[in-house]
View (spheres, helix red, strand yellow):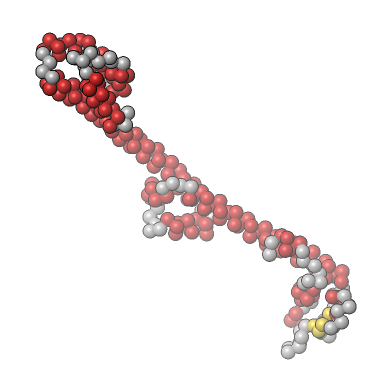
Length: 239
């Protein structure tokens, strides 16, 4: 029963229940009714009720007072219900907010076949200590995992940079062979484009790209086709 429903209760709507709260029901003779109800609907709800002769009928004021106490009891119960719902929801929100609960459980050395069984236990026992531990352990795991991922990404980025620079050198070497550049022309290319060749040799593809884009092909040492093929190496690698 929610608060609105509790507030809507009246003495008339729960009169018999209130009477049963006030009188000693153990005194009700066997096989007898607690009350009879007068069929005259013109009478008040109170006057329509005739209590069993074994009891003294509570006064209207006694019933009104009992209603106040009954409502207070219901309010306490409803608030407790809502508080419990809030407690459970708060635990579930924190538990489900852990992105990798299995990793957290492993870090905390908690052996459980199903994480939801651990959630159920935490709720039942209100085990805030365990919940906090899982949150902390996930943070530890995430930090460690981030370091591992960063190292892996670093290596992959380095490998990608080396691959791009190596592929560009392959394109240039192949161009020189295909076009039968003389040693003098090759030396001239090395001198003219030394800045580009230098940054490529230390695996700095993006620095080299800005220099390559600025090249104006001379048709001999560098053709437009060579420039385009070098830039194609970048585009194939998403750069």
